[in-house]
Length: 238
Ligand SMILES: C[S@@+](CC[C@H](N)C(=O)[O-])C[C@H]1O[C@@H](n2cnc3c(N)ncnc32)[C@H](O)[C@@H]1O
Image (cartoon, rainbow, N blue to C red; front, side, top):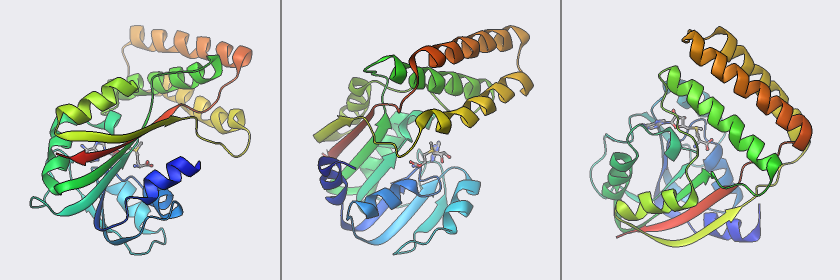
């Protein structure tokens, strides 16, 4: 993690923190690694199975796990001093409603950090990672799951400002990956291929996804693949 990202994440230390769309708790671990300290943490996610997996992770303080839709969270106004959402925005069916709720849940002046993979790419290897994500998001949408292609930086910042936040600091960066990223991607690509073959899809859709998948495989052979570019945006509730 770069010093700048560490400083941004570490600055979120507060009494009551909400990890929105928490999944199994990866973002909380990253925040702790950056030095953020919280007195009480709520981890909220739509899917119980992620929360159950997350409950097994050692964490201090232990988060209170709650299954809820971020667009309808069961908390009174001003329940939190700061909140964060990593890799969550593009999974929300109602992003504006969810951001409006985050605004309601924060105290005036409360901070929100959004961490999202970006649609912007720097080279062909990164464009290949983005193309993988887009295929995955489209397949999920056909399967009835809420998943969109990655937002641009401008779109993320627009969603924040349109929903009552002032962006104070932003950092777009290429995350460091320890190890061989191609090896990391291979099983994911195989799994995607399996789903394209076996999910109950319209045959025209299946053929189109298959062709794009094969094209992506060829592009990865030619140009490689590397992690998606990320945005960390620190905002203040107006
Ligand atoms: C890619 S995961 C990110 C998990 C975690 N924040 C991380 O960085 O590893 C996206 C998460 O968003 C959750 N999610 C999607 N829609 C949601 C909603 N409306 N309310 C709460 N969580 C939601 C999913 O269940 C999933 O756990």
